[in-house]
Length: 220
Length: 302
Image (cartoon, rainbow over all chains, first blue to last red):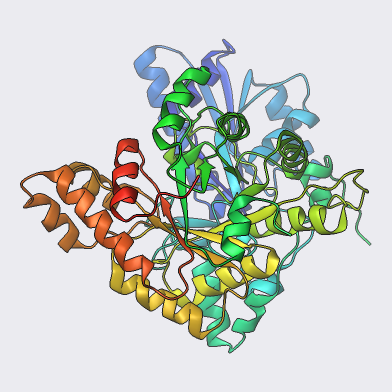
């Protein structure tokens, strides 16, 4: 899933105020941002209440409406809110950046502002905690490292083992972070496959990643 | 045939001394020369660091050229943090053309430690892959892509290791991979805890990890209790046992005690099987290197 978190309320209010409009539409997403507890029905409801409070205390006289789309990143759902979008001055997207971009693409003349800082592709660790798992390199090789992506989960994206800063299974960047190479090591050791680590990984072909240019994927 | 004095001496199993030179935050060669001249004549070769701790400094390529002008053999460090394979291969061709032969391949400290924490890092390749690429350029006279080189570089290739990396088994696999990938010499981070170091090298020898690769071990003279504490808490991968901190805190003169600890470490290392030399890392205490080496009778013959 896509992981993201809400921008600070002040930043959101500044973005809205920059458009000088009174009619605000808050659009959430039932998909990833719901799981991320950042832009689902509940968060849209809370955001509408917070914006009303802000409007009241700042004398903005905002008229605020909230709704959520099943998936903000798909055109077929975007088109269902044409009337609401036409009747507002500013749309605050609580979808991920992809949702907000699709909304901008579908309603090119409307003022769409992002309410979410989209962070990464990852998974919930426990309630409200999400961890990055994938960088979308376009050439998955996690089978070589016990099903763990070191490109995404090592701060340096190292491909042939830990750096010298890895001490007692923790990362040099932050001792709260596990060294991903230690996780790979533990997992391979448990499987009796430590010899897998003795196979050198040559320089990666990054042409299948974003480095090769913006990618278009065609389903087979 | 050896491509550098460092390689020649190591191949003859003569004990070597290398010393680390951190270029200044300066655009002046004179500022660099002040540091260079404090170390001149002390070592067989001089590591010129590549923006160490992710802090912007005069470049390792320029610093290495300044060493050559002073008749000091450089070990140019190249970190993967700041350059992709295009820049690294290009810099190596240029470095070789300028007379540089020894190259230390390193990943590089994470940028969060340095003075540009908001930068974007590169890490197109890691240090093991850097070794693979440079070895290919040297041995097969081709770039990684396969393009033929008109003249290949003659290189003596090194890599880094941390004797205190835990779990040891994992870090030894990493070291073995670096040796297989092309490391001809290894320089370690500074060591303090000799007992743990001995365990590490015994494991290396027992598992025959090094092959023909030579091991040069880091010695860092600590100048003060404050610095010892700072190193213990802030330098990635550095382990300083409490008894060293106690020694420094109860010392009458911290500098004298720091020199004494470094001297003891050097004496210990000279007698450890598998240690091919020492790597002096004076950080901000360049004047400590010469007396330490003179005391140990390790100043190389000119």
